[in-house]
Length: 401
Image 1 (spheres, rainbow, N blue to C red):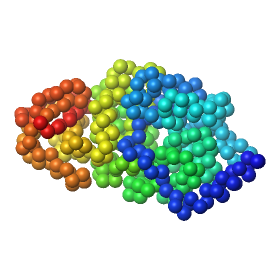
Image 2 (image 1 turned 90 degrees about the horizontal axis):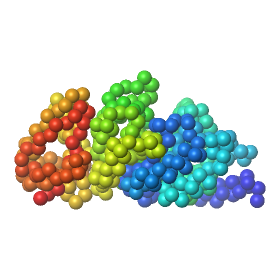
Image 3 (image 1 turned 60 degrees about the vertical axis):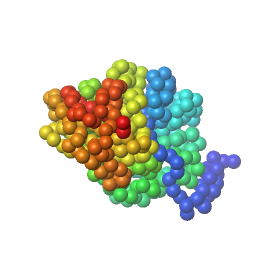
Image 4 (image 1 turned 45 degrees about the vertical axis):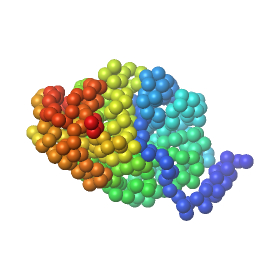
């Protein structure tokens, strides 16, 4: 059968599904974890890099820690063929995309790809506008598991309808794909994207500086993206997560800043998508990205985003309810200099979270476990004392004694 005829047949066969089109269920029941090429490599990507990254996700323990999606970002595209099917750049990806996806799958990983709702991507490559169903069929044929879908060069397109179109196209192609919307929060996706995508960006692109504005107007520092999440927690939950963008851990910030960045993303129940060079990680970067207790806070099955309880002189006091009647507690030092912490738990009395219908009652004694120190630190029966480095955190788990 002629290739174009196969396309037409596949699209026609999918038409009955359109009346019940939806995003795929049972994906992203906890925030997705993986790696993406953009933050470190931008357009400097090729087949060898992705194969080496897949190897390193296994060898370093990243895969076993939960990082299962290996995602290509922009600049992988070549030209469309005579029938309109998108093809990978033949120089960067000489073996073709199917062979690369098969290699990633052979490592026990899932494969993610990138496109854009406009005719061109942010880097000027072929976008999916007008080719949504055909691109979805191509991704399915390759075995793609995850799609990051950007919002450059979209002109007057309606964001809700554009993203629904690609959602429907993915569903019609019949291969379950985790759908990641990347329209930067411009159209308040948290208010409408719960039945469209599994995660949605709430901010512009992240920049590898802890607390600054990038010279690029579309990029922001870690804390700038973090601060935009504080009023969005009611929109997050299993299968639909707020996304403050990918991790910059290992990309040039100080170790304390990397640790705080990772900690607060876990407190937000945010997707954990690493963006560093996995072939050249320091022991500190590995220790941050693969801290099992901090990851467990992010991946907790209760699926509730944390909240700031109090701010005092540059210190933020955050709580996140966890399954098993436990709580994650984080003290974040927004100051450049050290902060001497002395916290009397009894002063809090009872803290209620109306969203999760849970409360923490400090008339009860809780055992304290320090996540980053990896040790127990007494109970809440007495004041908690610690010295926080500039831009540093203390992260604790409280469990009833």
